[in-house]
Image 1 (cartoon, rainbow, N blue to C red):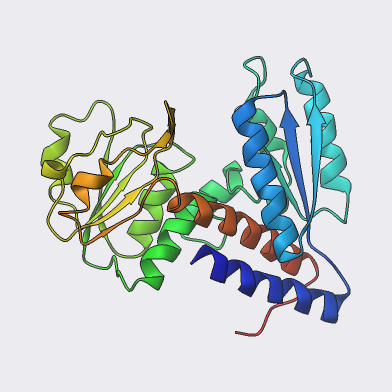
Image 2 (cartoon, rainbow, N blue to C red; image 1 turned 60 degrees about the vertical axis):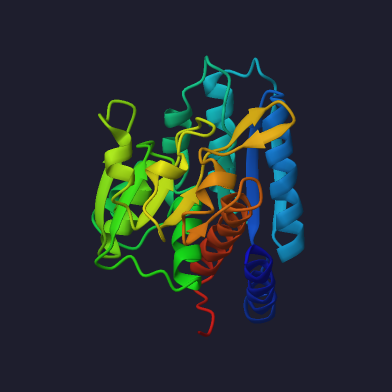
Length: 278
């Protein structure tokens, strides 16, 4: 699915070049040398090159101050050739990720984390939507899983996934329950879910006896373990119960990157007042 979306996005980039003689520009700010972040940034660069987005990585040392990172953001905000900006997380502990995100021009906030974009999402207004929840909704739609009237349970309440995910499901007319670390009897809630989205970073948290037969199970969790990475769902056991299930790796991750590219391209289309046909 992600590969098909990237092909569609490449066509949109070509149309933008044809009709507006412009190329979407994406800037990634990377502070420090976190190994996982280095991999994520390379994956984003690769995806950008595939769809025709011009990407640049702005690398700052782990010792960079808040003011130095903010200065980089201000420069990118003022650069008309840059249509999307993101700060790769995590950032060093002495920096405020929230303050950095808030400094990004909301029109260039391709991660969908800016308070204005999150506020517009709460109000049901057009906005840039966080990439992972947007990818989950795209998967549901393309597989014909309509949330309307269904009971959706979201495990996790982060501003990156859990909260925007619950808002998108509400907007799609689902009845939504949000669970978190203080939820009592988690299994009682997850067993009621027609759509179960799990995003807490605890490998194997969701077992087969916690899933309603036939449910759509979306595993957003990703944790580094010995021998690779693991999701929040016991995939081998839950796949015998669920009607639909996403693997880790190879499930939500590729969709998240595809949605990032889509957000960057949409930002460029808005900048150049170009609306693709269809």
